[in-house]
Every structure is written in structure tokens, then in C-alpha cells.
Image 1 (cartoon, rainbow, N blue to C red):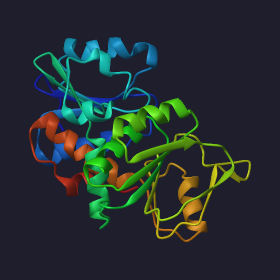
Image 2: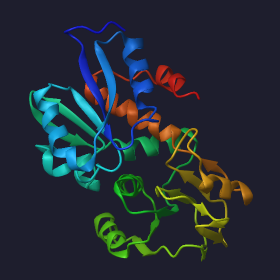
Image 3: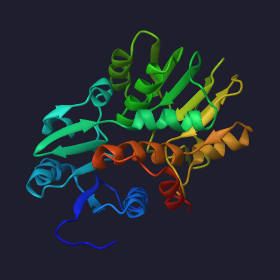
Length: 274
């Protein structure tokens, strides 16, 4: 890829970003389509977020993806929100259109794309979401939009979970996450881990699940990042997925927002093979 004065910058804001696969995925897409873009990771600490967003305009960066811990806190610094971001109260993609910064959220749609690719239809089903942050908001909103029957939010901070319940509607419930406890579930089809904390510490599972049938365990983390959550699923012979499919599909949707081009999924998927 030749880089010169015509090259446009797209990238990633987050902390950490060192092990993100997004640069490889997006640069593979740009190379495949011969587009004059380069995708760069930027480690942005919380205290520097406002300045980093200002730099998008100043440096005429075409757009950036947003990852932890900025998906919610970036919103006040933007000019407008797309319905995808407004609906869930979190942003994972910013597009710069002549200095006007618009926030989008492709996480939820990418999550649904990955489920559908695995032949899982959420309509009429019951889900459990561990966590109540930006990723949980995006996933919960997407499931609601695709006909989920019921969602249980489990989070250490109940007030944060209650805010998510209010956002998603009257078919959503919450309860406090009590570490190392046993949770009895019935008729659950999908259990989603959005937590950044380990699922196993000092030989103990964060939660033990009992009394459920056929549930798919889905960890939003991906690749070589260790997942005790998926290890737990293996111990009970439950079907399991990591977040690599969601990364691919949310990235493909963000790529189209950045470039106006249809994302080359095959090229992007190949870049994610570890």
C-alpha cells in the first residue's frame, strides 16, 4: 500500500488497542479494493478523549472506530448521532463529513449478522446478558429489534443494569451479579458475556449456571484472548462462540460507512485468521 498526500486516515480509538485485529482487517479490505486509506490504532486514555475527538477534525481523519472504555463517554463530543447509536446510547464508529462528526453503532447489527451466519435466529427466544456497558447496550438493542422474547441483565452495579432495562423495554429484567454464586436458569437460549473481568479466578467460576437447556454461550471477546467463559461452556458441553464473527461484521459495516464501498468480507475474514 503506497502512502502519500492523498492517503486518507481511518482508525481506532481505545485503551488498550495493542492487540486489536481491526487494523489488519480494515487494511486488508483497503488493499483488496485498492482504496487510498490506511487504518491506524490510537491508544487514547480517558483524560485525552476530548482532545482526540478534536483531532479528528483538525487532521481531517475520515473516521474512527471506538472501543473500550470510550463507547459511551465519547457521545458528548460528537455533533450528531445516528439512530443506531441513539437507540443504545453507545458509539463504536465516528464518521467525519467535512468537520461534522456523526456517531454510529455497528456492534449490534454485527452481532446479529454473526448469529445469523451461525443459523441462530433470536426471534422468540430468551437471552441472558452479563454486563451492562456499551457492548451490552448494543447487543441488547439489536436483540430487541430482532424479536427477542425476554432478556435478563446481570451486572454487579444494579443501578447501571436498571438504566439498561429502562432503555430496552418492559420485556427486560435485571438482577445483581453476586460473584461465585449459582444461577438457576430455565428456558434460556442465549447467554452473552460482555464483561471484561475474568470468568474464573482462584479456581472459582464467576457464575455457575444450572437448569437450562440448549443455550448458546457467546463471548464478545475473540481470538487468542483467553476466555474462561467459553471454557465453562465446554465443561458443560454447551455450544459456544467467540466474538470474532461480530468483529468481522461490525467492522464490515463500519468500513462501508467510512468508504462508501461494500466491504470485501472474504478479504477481511482472511485477515482475522490467527
